[in-house]
Length: 125
Image (cartoon, rainbow, N blue to C red; front, side, top):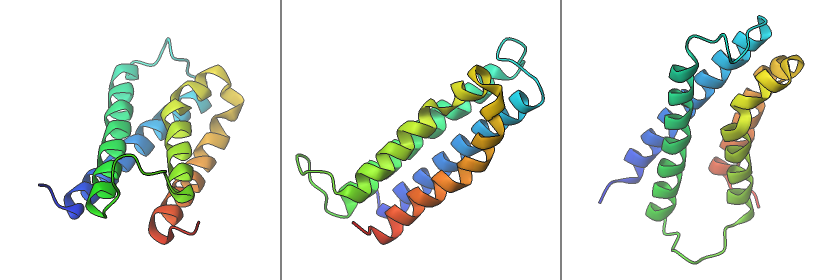
């Protein structure tokens, strides 16, 4: 059985991977790049996918360690974190589809990360 601390490290590593890949994609799009001329597209997509998977595995591993059991209803704070995860998991397509929103993505990454961190630490609702 793996510890809660191990899952916490996996979760944080996933956040770092996902945020750095999204930042790279947004910066490329802000500089006029497209998905077709992004030479590191496969690399950033791999980092993004690996990060999203680590966030999910680490998060659900921590839930299991704090006593959350299968079949229970998700508390509202967890639903908020899952919605943030879904938004961030779908975000790499946004800068290339709507390049004018790439700057907003760069500004929104810390905001979404802050919302998810607040929900996970304080569990307000």
